[in-house]
Amino acid sequence: MEQATDDISPDFAAPRFVDVANTPGMTARALAVWLQTSHPTMPNFIIPEAERDNVIAYIMSLKVDPPL
Image 1 (cartoon, rainbow, N blue to C red):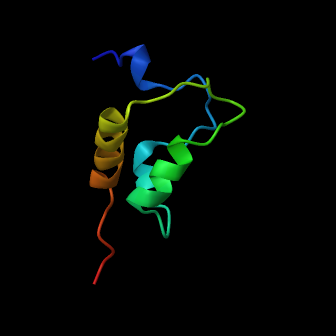
Image 2: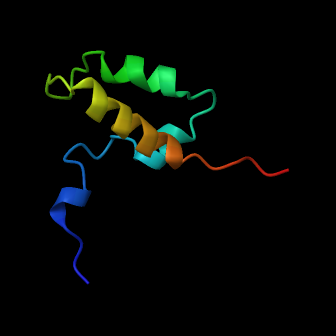
């Protein structure tokens, strides 16, 4: 099966959402700040609050519980 091109970032150095979620100390608040901060390699766009909260919830849902 061929992978959709939308699944791949044009910036090969961009972290995957799963890696962002599992960054030590990552919280929903940290993601909110990150999404509101300009990044030199990303377009500057504003995500409405409800959609931003959905994106944050999705990314945080990828967090893996540490082994016991």
